[in-house]
Length: 362
Ligand code: PLP
Ligand code: COI
Image (cartoon, rainbow, N blue to C red):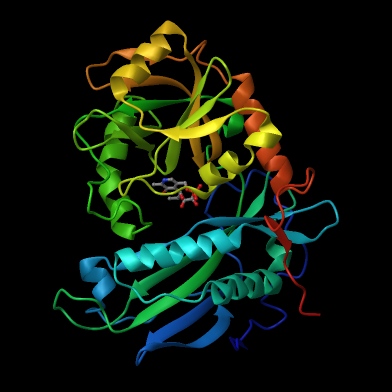
């Protein structure tokens, strides 16, 4: 793929490595540039890196009416050698295409997606925040741009990648276990729907549930399946729990659960973690009984933004609360978090190809 460049002039661009004073937070900041590519006449074309800024779009653009839009979330890290390393971008590119299939958006070759992200990071590498626990959060997304009001797949799209210099997703960082609302009122997905994709509409649909969670003092909703019997996901994370023998259980992927790259990575890391990590159908009743009997000792969520988020308690819609263990961060979760972030930061060697240095153009 040939990429053209229209960069900000030297005076407008960041000139030195970004050294923020306070925590930069998650997703608030932008870098100087973005990658853009259009789809028209049946092909992806005009790959370019341009200054970050607004799109010009027709009011009838189909993404604005029918929500034909998808996104990904990935991260890049700075290692001790001062180079920036991306983490498993090939997996995000693959999932972008599977989301695209679910909402009828044309695929982009995985190699092009990775090339686009690496080229953008290279241009804006001085934006990497020099701060403990920081990263460049990578947000690739695609949306329908055709100006037409019939409900059918658009004939035109834009693919864009933007970068956000970021810190910890949860303000409190890893130190504090969160509470989840077990909701039988709100559902994230139904079989045959779009739950296995990162379709923008899935997140719009989660907002009302998120508001309800906040009213219960919970950080997010633990979603159940449509029959309210099985545990599915937690907000923008896969849910997991840990048995007293140390085994990690993640609900089996179905078409109502997003296949988390973090979850899949933790499964692959089982030999290094020295414990079993497996998937199974998790029924709510057994889950609760096993917490109460002490068979389940820890729980949490896996996700790119949230990394590994410990859960300390659950609240039901009738106000009943169940606490896991002492409600604090457990030692197994701490070990998983440590290994995973050590691999991302290049302190521990992970499986081949997981971290890749972002090539320098000069
Ligand atoms: N589930 C949902 C609904 C998500 O939005 C995310 C975030 O991307 C995840 C799970 C975790 O997936 P990953 O680990 O690939 O970021
Ligand atoms: C991610 O973890 O990258 C996500 O996409 C979650 C996001 C909705 C905050």
